Image (cartoon, rainbow, N blue to C red; front, top):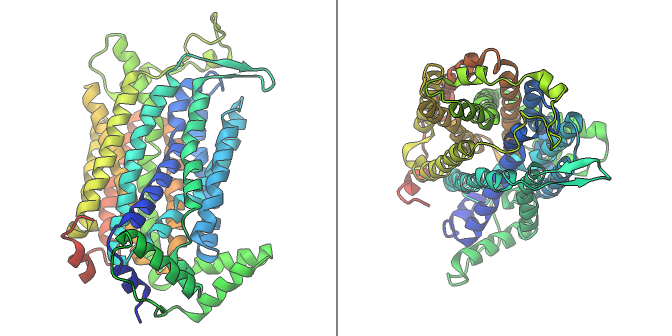
Length: 522
């Protein structure tokens, strides 16, 4: 008899089944980004429709992440006790519904509420998908599978600025008297950002639950059927018959099994909360405590910059372009921000023109915002592809240290550069620290066993999204008054994360299976 890992290793590497799953997983990751970061394109053009101040923009930028934080623990628990797919599937559909509703809101509080629920539901797939995808692959290949999904995610993200440009910069509008709103392109853009969630939800209807999860729950025959199906898909039905009738049980503490079985059958809310704690507590005990703490701090630091600073990226580029239109050629990013502050009294008592909108309102984003966002997403796509190719050969530590250090230094230098184009490029490099999210997730999948893996990823990403909330609100509070400080905070925190990477357990080690497979790309 073979273990689950040994059995999966017998399946041809990255055949059509695995590639299909990687594509769907990557699209889900892209859907999460569209749902959470797409709002950054909306804020500059919706500020007059919703009467948004800079601080309110910061709140609205972060509220989806607040929803993710509030539900990450719940989804992680349910994913480890009820199933990965059981959580991912309904939350994708519910996130889409919430997004559609948010496109019809008329004020700051309504859109804040609906975006919170979008984050609440999209959280179910945002972290669980890593565990789900990893468990269709042997441990030696799970990191590359995750990086493969991240590449798809990067390709999908390239569409974000393209979609924003093609939808937001249109000039049509129509009134919906029943809702008392003028439906403009930015509202349609929000719906389009939610469509990948709907598409992925439909696609996952044709894929099963994680085989490793099913096997850990004692569903051996169902697991074997999934393995046979994977083998048939990957070989095209032309390979030798896979002889597999039973699997070797993996070691798992009996008390953990009992807790998981009780949780799956529990109907009481209090008992469910108690079991959530019992599922979470091991992550902060014994050998797992150091691992959990480090990955949570790393994810917090990455998201603080990659999402917190990204939320204001289109807005800042719009301000720089506005200053350049006035003939200013030498200015720092922060000087451009200070020179183009919105007068709040204009928002509160607008000077209406013939169209009913204040003269200062931006109904379109400057084309440079889309161009540089497109460059950023292209760098992400190519970067994930390169990391996926070299991660086994080079190791995770050198990748983390290089990205953290390089991005952190660029973030600090932005404060001093008075050439707008060069400063924007350094800003783009600063935001590429998001490469480290998937690398740290790959570390997390390797560091924790099946029964704790989804919860570990969810908890770490919960701290990451907390970093997004903190980062977006820091920028919202400080941008107009202490702009330089926001870049110093981002740069220094990333350098600190680079130092902390050296303390990830087993980060220096590469097992024999990784060495054996490091020559081939995928």
